[in-house]
Length: 92
Image (cartoon, rainbow, N blue to C red):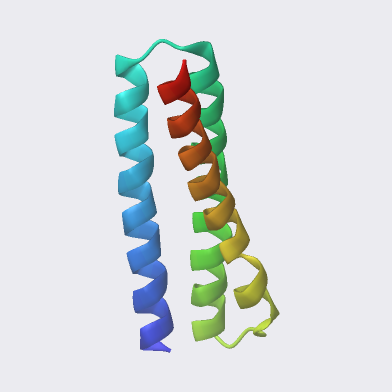
């Protein structure tokens, strides 16, 4: 159970730092497209933190294992959106 809590805390910490970093970068850029993508990235990461880390915490407290396989999808969507936004802003 402690390993699940440790993993949940790590993912929560790293993605929270990433959300702060892209928020700071968003202040430096004033592109409307970049703002929409950054908001999408931050939103999916925030929901990913809530669901993924939350499911790991719930597992440590004895909940079922079905959420563990579903919730990492939001983190992946966020990373893909960030990559898309990076490529799109390079081409403009």
